[in-house]
Figure 1 (cartoon, each protein chain N blue to C red):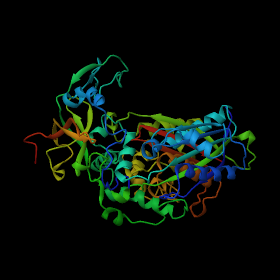
Figure 2: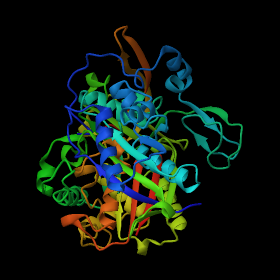
Figure 3: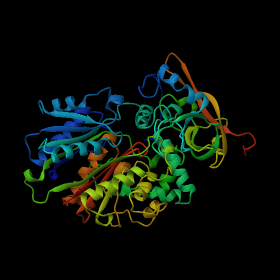
Figure 4: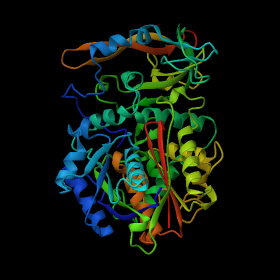
Amino acid sequence: MYGGNCCHNNNSHIGGVNLEISRNWRLRNQRYRLVGTECGCGHRSFPPRRICPTCRENPQNPVQFSGTGTVYSYSTLYEAPEGFEQFIPYTVALIDLDEGPMISAQLTDVDPEDVAIGMRVEMVTRKLKEQGESGLIVYGYKFRPIVGCYP
Amino acid sequence: MREVVIAGVGQIAVREHWETSLRDLAYQSIKKAVSDAGTDSVDALYIGNMLAGELSGQEHLGALISDYCGFDGIEAVRIEAAAASGGAALRQGAMSVACGLNDCVVVTGVEQMTDVLQDKVTAGLSLALDTEYELASGISLAALFAILTRRYVHEGCCSPEDLALFCVNAQKNAVGNDYAMFRREITVDTIMRSPMAADPIHVLECPPVCDGSASVVLLPAEKADLEAPVKITGSAVATGTIGVNNRPDPLVFESVRDSTEKALRMAGKTREDVDFYELHDLFPVVAALSLEASGFAKKGEGALMARNGDIALEGKIPITTMGGCKARGNPVGACGIYQAAEAVLQLRQQAGKNQLPCEVGMIQCMGGTAATTITHILEV
């Protein structure tokens, strides 16, 4: 099945999933600080863009998002792409950031059954995965319920 | 531009073909298509494939497959657009015949997915997403469609059971298709009792991981000696944002809307002219949202067409008439060519128990979360 039962992970390489160190480093401002772009017309984007999708203007200025937002929708995965088995089951979501753009991310520090559409969440830095035999640990953003909003 | 006809089709049954290599899967469907067309000279071969590099460690399929098929020296390339690769290859083939560069073109879709374990397939399919921003967070293709499914139900568009009806319809239609993988009927109850793959999508709402290949032979109409040839009269590609999160409304598949409109305009047809619609039913919500974006249903009412029976063979706009991704199976890059072959059988009145009264068919395949949609109009 497309969700599929994952069996085991005895091969650390799969080209598109394990990102090289340089590639992770290039993403540091997005992974750790949630830096996107803002256009003169007011449109904000995450990930960063070169061309504004609204007015097609260039350039776009960097902007750091506060990391607070609302869950648009979510899914709990019982089968995962190779490399994420250790987190199963985990919940991923589309989140409307308060400043405008929508972002896709994992939720953390919350039980799947407690997640709801409309839940207020905030960005935190967490381990995304451990890559390959060398054990490179990749950190990045996940989102957790804002304290006081947890039911 | 010259008018292009599909002069021959060939399919192999969608299965777990552990005994057959990638090149042999392609060879078998090509042989059938070339034989069906009754042609002996091929000018070019276009191959739709998504995952050979990732799952089989094999790129350069153009040379590999043309060599194996004995098409010595011809133009041969692989075309990739994720799960829309087959449709992309069909369009390349049609364009090369239409513009007069080639006369006889074979378009093949081929995919071999069952050699590797499930987690590799899930990761491979997810390469259609934005690797740095989606896959790096552990987000899979199924996860994103599950997110859309939950939101669609949350907005009151339908019940989860309504969505399961798309699968019921697909598997019912597959009973009459010898090339389909799941040739048995299924009930809503069985689907709803199956485990979750990506909540709220059940395992039995997912298409099977499978192997397959389908091929078509394209000729210019002036050189095709056929009584009632199936013509390709519309062909269009549209793209949307790579991330579903970057759209004004994630529940609107703009690329489906745009490619449908472009293809219909090119063919000089309206939706009312379309007798059946082979959409890309990767998951039930994709079928519902495709019906909406393509204009066959109003926004929020796509799933109602399943509830009302409008999508059945005897309904207003039959979809997945030979089983679709869900039941025929979805050998990813081959899907668009299976759709073409099935549509040709319908239009030639060779669809057996699933035969529709029809003259115009619309086929549509989709890459990623509708980041690419490719639509063709076929008619007799």
